[in-house]
Image (tube, rainbow over all chains, first blue to last red; front, side, top):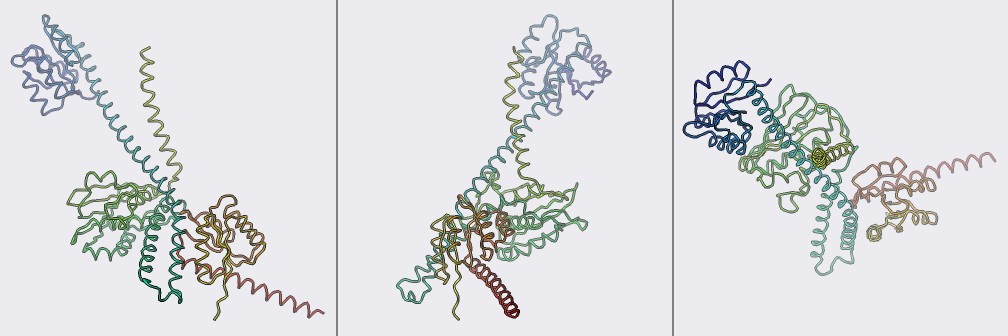
Length: 409
Length: 146
């Protein structure tokens, strides 16, 4: 049997001592306290599961002590000990939240039984609490995933629809540009104005196109080509690719990795995109003179990639949104708001995870964990599994009241 | 040097797209005929000589892939460039396996389109040239027999 953390509170040493001895013999040694005050000061330092509490105490009496215990440590169960004449106190105590009461003189077996019951209750509540915490965490994650999934579907659908009119604008603008170049139009008034406006149209088309193609790239599947990937090499390559941007912002990039780092089996092109996205974000977040550290580490069949910047950090209110499509803190036209959305999509498809930690004013760390052998995840299966889980959770929830009424009948 | 215009058939259910792309291609000196469905495309091919078809994949009724199959069956020398608004290039790749010359993502860069158009026509010209030579050889041999 696991250890029960027991506390015995009684002012009569003649009663307390033998009981302590007998309980110790039975494998549940209690901590001792001679008064309500002492009991509370012990509780402040040591967590206790079950308290055996004498009602008749000098100073603060048992019921007062009980009330304080229940207020401060609601998870702790209290068994009251009352004298023959004071059973009323016991009833009173149960009303105040005591587990039960026993009348002195007490029978040891009886007490031990009660202690075990009380402990069982403590344990059950603890488990329930843990389970409900776990469940609400999972549910939150699922709601977030569900939302992202539907946002993704909507966004890609829109991208398809937008591409067609965009193509028309593109051709029309291109045609006008061709016309303006004709000899017979060489000297029309305000020609530069037309050209300037057309240039703006063309530039905006390519901006819009970038967004739609990036979004559509997110749903692109079955195009992965797997091979052996040396992450150190890949990081270096990505660093070269963002080098100019880093220099412009006066940000230094530092790469660190174990010499023993193994190659992983994955999709190098998609991973390079991940590296570039994370590095670009880090550069944009950084202040002049800042630095970025990339750290590659291997543990338990996974390789972790840490990208740490010394930038502004992510404010609390943005923390839940950074992986959402179209969320960007950059000014319009600067960022598509799709970088991290796409990054996470890629990583999850490669069987990895991405986490982020950030301190305002100090910087942000992105941690990507990739399996050494990753297989492309079938997205449909993933979704099925996800909806299965969701339905199961929903099902259980709606079942709960049914089973309750069933038991009541 | 006078450039011989390419005879282009633009097929897309988006009327406006067909219209402006045609205008732009005409402006660069090509001869363009518009069509707005797979069916119309095949009708035109039965009446007129066409070098290259620019074919949208997503169309109501007979879609781009179906139209492509028909073109390859009936007019194997006509080159086809697929246009897709989809991010998934799978359909485009399928099209190329069926014999399409190449594909482009909408909205396409005009330079890319011009380049591919030119290359497609070149391939058709080369093929026709080879056929002519082969026919000439055949004729020579026949006349030699006589």
